[in-house]
Image (cartoon, rainbow, N blue to C red):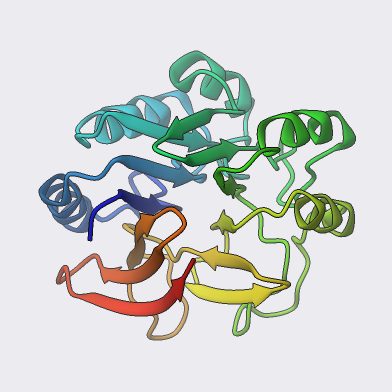
Length: 244
């Protein structure tokens, strides 16, 4: 299939306690073999937002070979003043990438030292400006806008999730990418696909859910395929397909 190839990683949690270096090496090798058009990391790059974790995370992410990367922070990255370190090491928390009819917009949904999500009204004009138009539109958040099964009592939905859902529906956003809960899932609501990534590399998993990440093949105005890839084995499983 010609077109755009996207890798969606999330919740790698680089740190000494839970990060699996073995899985990390496997994921880097797998992703580099795919030669993706863009790699998207939807937050929790570090475990606690400390400087040494940020340095390790940047070294890890720099080894991923792709022309484009869209990287946003997660709630763990915003701990211990880590939000300031994110700006220093990764640049903007509101990245934008446009390629071959696809527009990817990252939005910071974190608050310092809080696990709860909040996009905030200050971000709405940015979202509207960058996700208007006829491109295939993708928005990347760390926090999920719709609850995920098997994740326990819900408490981290962004406080303004309703307003954000209304906004992206009005803009006819095609795909929403999130992380946060370490549980892969997919919802389709009002023709918007909400795709959640599991954790790619951390040992912090629920029950028997394995470490994984998402791979997206997209030919604008023609076809979309979404796969879930096992970090341990590289096995690719089709989880969604749509004619555009």
